[in-house]
Image (cartoon, rainbow, N blue to C red; front, side, top):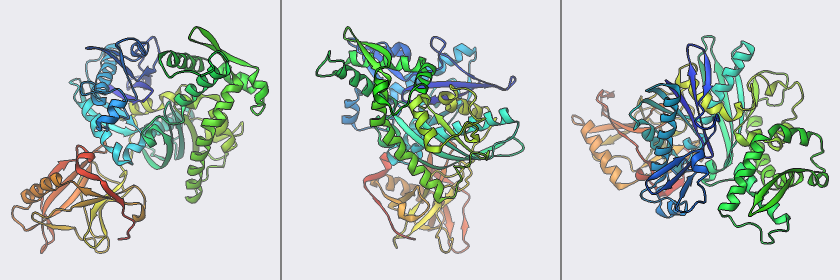
Length: 555
């Protein structure tokens, strides 16, 4: 069986593709729902997962763990302790228990014994920020440790979602999609806005390239942002305050979070009712909406009323400014690069709301207003078949990729090279460059194209990593002393017959970086065939992040 997983901070979804029936299918682990709460609860040596863990929240002698995906690269004990983690229950061990449980249950429900190809989606920002790049390697190791998993690949969530939407387009129109997809991914803790380019060949092979992204919240800032969770907590807090039953508001305790969970359940099961009610009113008429009750939520034995007006007021205060700011940033990029996002008649630009919060009426209304959608707008047609597609898109796309139905174009997620003593940068790989996985690319001078040569025992002391298209956005990072010693041994071993060696880099299909060294004869300019390399298991263990600084120099 091939499996695709959207390992979310709030919910996780799992999908598979039946090649014989040409059918995508989500796998339900709890009560017929494909949405598995990304929650683990521990009571001594006993662990609960998903819905079973969520109902344990707040109970005596129970430790509850959430948002552990984003904590995977975190090793600072004070930060871990603040989130309730310990040396026994680390984010890595909790994530491993959770994912192992999900995969075993998926096998049980499908009657399979092995996962031949597993693809897990991660935020695109895991390609961008030094403190999250390690997450890919950690997550891949966690999955590869399972004895029933044969092959693991980590891919970006927008690439997986774009694969699914382009696949939907082909099914709905009978044509291959060629163009851009703007993904507005709004989840529990994060807003991610990503522009992808999709090129589909007549053979069905699909190339997906991430062109630009922006966002806010957990993925961007390392903490829960102004997204679905904060919206629901703020609505509940405001409703309690306005009830006059609790003058001091609500303490953020188990009873409050139980009320927030109840509100979330109501929002999730009432999407159509909410849409119908809001459609009946003017969203600017807050006073009238304040008189219309959405639901009542029990808190400390009292019924707390939540009105439609309250939801609009909280949304306008907390969510709307953040979404508007990030959409404006993406629009500026598209205008600068002359991407026509306004033509509603052309079938080469699509806009898709993704994630659980992406189904919320007010989010949809703001996006439709921003892009001036019409009733016959082609920018929103043929890629979403059902509202649930928004929440399943990443897992469904990952399943398509795992089954080889579609493929992702292999492009470098960042530039990487070596800082020279003259202050220039000799890059081995350039941002957005087409690359071959597991193939080493060696640092070369920009002007002369010659390999950057190192003497025995004298490896570089700093690398340069660049997410932009010019050196002004480059980040020069020093290499820790212990890794320099490892590189000395690498060069010495590689250069057993010569006085010099060259250094390069490679990326595997999950974006994990390796440093390579090969002997080099400067007279014949011949590169030796014997390749020696070190897999960069952890950037945090290799790079002196405290000494990192924007380079801002032109080479």
